[in-house]
Image (tube, rainbow, N blue to C red; front, side, top):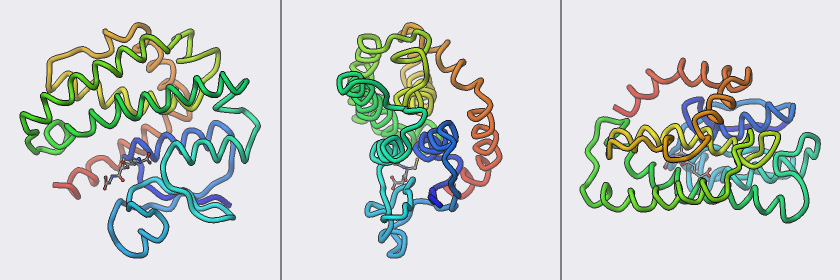
Length: 216
Ligand SMILES: N[C@@H](CCC(=O)N[C@@H](CS)C(=O)NCC(=O)O)C(=O)O
């Protein structure tokens, strides 16, 4: 059986988890926190979570794992359609990672973990997020899902990235980022209403206090 390594507060872990659950793929969770321990690095070369143990070996990097799942379990595709349509979903996945999640993540220490963000980081992140917002407005259809009638892997990346990025934008710049992405608030509400998403959110909430005290 597939083994998903990670922990319930991790947004990347939850992107993979919701894909596994939505597709109905059997899997086990192995609770793991990021580290540079030798045994973990032998599974996840950079030491991050998530990582997926498959019958053929181990894969790290969320987009790689999502692609592996869709190719190995073609029912209920999360990167559906023609090569071009698949390209559109993949394009959004990359835009969300590179221009929403990663820049926002630079400011997590000051926003979520009681640290202080440097002025340089604060200045550098905003224009990148603005480009990400512009790309989502250009590429997203929000009708009702990001790119079509059903959720894709891009929706799952969005729901576990945009919530955090919006919190970063609000606290750092007093910027209501969701108001600037037409349809995004309704889409996040729709995605979060799903019973699978609610279960994942409950597990995240249950682990949150322990996670924050571990970091503090
Ligand atoms: N590019 C990685 C990012 C994963 C990631 O940043 N995971 C976080 C937890 S949500 C982590 O392991 N952080 C520890 C670190 O950055 O060393 C992916 O797509 O899976």
